[in-house]
Image (cartoon, rainbow, N blue to C red):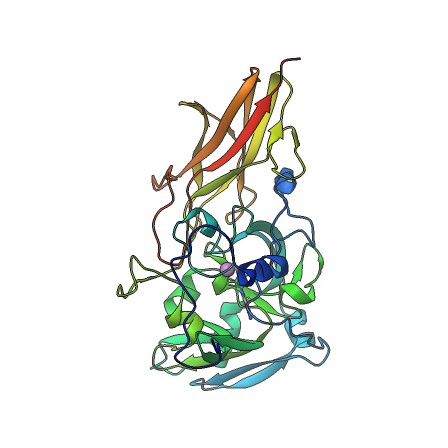
Length: 364
Ligand SMILES: Nc1nc2c(c(=O)[nH]1)N[C@H]1C(S)=C(S)[C@@H](COP(=O)(O)O)O[C@H]1N2
Ligand SMILES: [Mo]
C-alpha cells in the first residue's frame, strides 16, 4: 500500500501479534522506565517521547517564532527576546493520549504504549498569554494554531504537526512557551529550541519545535486537530475532541524483575508499595486505593508537586508467599475514578484503566 495517497488509511482493528510497523514506532518512541516513578521529577532523558515524524534539528540562535494571520500586530521574535521575558518554571505531568493503547482490543495501528507514556518535568519558559495579547488578535479571531517545524504524512495527508486552542482555552490554561526542561535547554527530541506546554491536557496539545502561531477566524483544519485525537466508538462516530487527561495512577514495580517477562519477585514481609497519581485540568487526586486480589486498601497520599504535577501514594503491604496481582486506582476531586477495564475507543486513546503488576513472593 502506498501511504502517500489521500486514499490511504492506517488499519484499525488489530488483534494479537504486533506488526513490524508497530515495532518500529515502539523503538523510536521511548517510554518512562517505571522504576523512575520514585523521582518527583522525571530525570532528563528518561521522559517519554512521542514524535510523529523526524526530529528537526533547529539552530536555537537563529530560530524565530512568527505570529501571523489575523493579528493587528503580526511579528516575529527570536529566542533571545523570548528568553529575556519574565520566566516561569513549573512542574507539569504530561501523558500521551495513546498511553494504554495496547490494553484496548482490537487496537489501531499506532504506537503500542502500555503504561509508560507519562512523565513530569520542570518546564521553564514565559507565559504565552501576554505575547498573544501583544500581537493583538483581531475581534473575529476564534482560534490560534500552533505549528511545529516537523513535517510528514498521516493517512495520506502531508502536513506540519499543528494543533489549535481557542482564545478562551488560552485564557484558562496557563500555557507556557517553554525553552527549558529540568534546568537545561530542551533536548532536540523534546522540541528544541521552543515548544508550548499545555498543563492538564494530554501531550498532543504541547506542540514541539514551535515555528509559528496563526490567528484564525475559522476553525483550524489541520490533520492533528480534526483528523485524529477524537474519542470515537466507531468509524462513523464523529467523535469528541480529546483534551484534558483522565484520572490515572501507576505503581512503581516492587522487588526485582525477571529480565524478559518483567514479572516481579518480592521478599515476604513488609513491603512499601508506591506510585504516582494524576488527573487533568488541574483536578487534584483525593484518593488512591491499592487492590490486592479481591480487596481494596486505602493508600497514603502526599500533596501534588504543584498544581499540574502528580501526587505520590504509598501503602505498606505485608507480602505473603504466593502469586499476587496488585493494582492501584485513583479518584480525583470531581469524583472521577479509574475503571477496572479499558474504556473502549476505536484508536485506543485515553485508556486510564488501573495498572496491574504480577508479583511472586517465594517461600523463604
Ligand atoms: N511538533 C510536534 N509536537 C508534538 C508532537 C509531534 O510529533 N510533533 N507530538 C505530540 C504528542 S502526541 C505528545 S504525547 C507530546 C510528547 O512530548 P515529549 O516527546 O516531549 O514527551 O508532544 C506533542 N507535541
Ligand atoms: Mo501523544
